[in-house]
Length: 139
Image 1 (tube, rainbow, N blue to C red):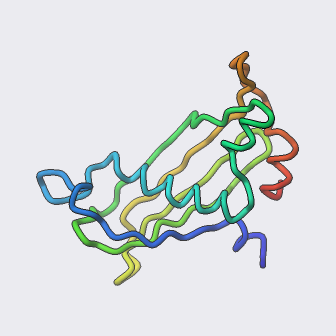
Image 2: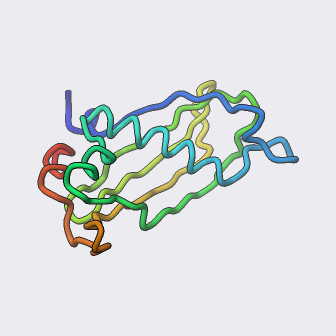
């Protein structure tokens, strides 16, 4: 498996009714939920469980930055691919995301997120990702 393929995960999702707003399009905040589904799938594929790591080593990995660009709306029952791509894991864990319709590959949204390592209970932000996590993520 190539490094690019290893650091990418695709989740296929169908828009449920409860994710839509009164205009019958997906409410903007739900896109972050879709990103999270793909991000979690990628971490799982790479063998990284951040909750277990917290229990063992007392490091939290909060989201410290997010962004999204809405291009075309998703609607009820649209089937789409949410692709998560790991872009860095040295000083922060960074992901980029794309949401595309399955039927025609139309781009609906793009986004990014960053996570920092925080030592608990001191709540001290670390300036690098712990070696065990960084290595598991291929950095």
